[in-house]
Length: 328
Image (cartoon, rainbow, N blue to C red; front, side):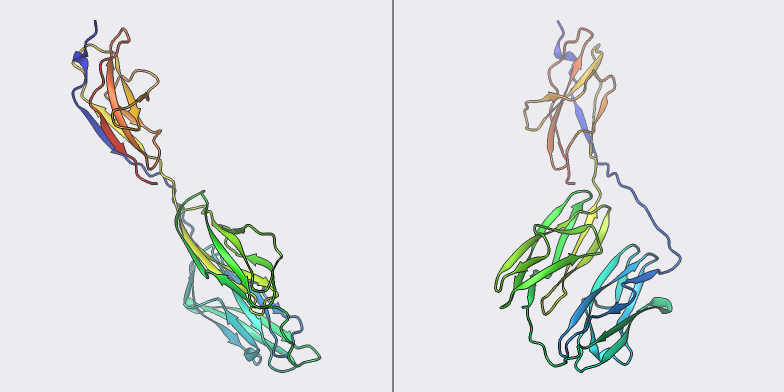
């Protein structure tokens, strides 16, 4: 009869945490900054009224250290910039969107130059032009004001390839507001839960989901531009988050060899101390070590081992050891 004399008296547990990640770098010789649209023209606008358009700056080169965004030209007083603050570092492959409003105070045709300056003398010019309607005068507002709450979102760390969601609320003031579109240049952030255009009745609200699904490791952010017939269109809100790489954890087990004549060992694993246990290996292990790569992040496991003789009989179970797997 096979006895338990071959039972390993001591089992050592080595937990090996292996973080698998990839690192890629891109090298650019210089800043390659572009604006979309490259030229902004406004439809005829009533005196003391306003019309707004979004401008997106995109960088395809090295980090753009933007020092100033402003207006030049004789008609500068008829245009207003909002939604961007300087200094601003715009990383390679990233974009930022802001609003430029045409708000004439008198009749006529007006023009200005939107100017963007960055380190080492870099500059970008976007021509602006607009005119007033022939009737002139003040046009009473036909729509209300849109309130966006909250105005910024922080998703924190999110595992690459998974989606985190929050809720943004749009509220109309004493007049109804129609939201025509909501755009962002960073496709890792999206809106869900409503079909646009959507009209919000006076004093009412609608809620949409804002989702962050990172495609790579690292911090990122965006600005949403919400356009429609609101007096303060476009409305803006920001979101930020960081993608973190998934990790494959491994539990490494090792034990003292049996002093009896055996052909191998079996490894058993459970999720509670004392069992029940399930065998991990498909065939007897000849070596005195084993790596379990099937563990899940955030779980706790309990291991025991047995010795197997040539007849296939097993010894009693060894002492139990515990492995705590981190998250992620």
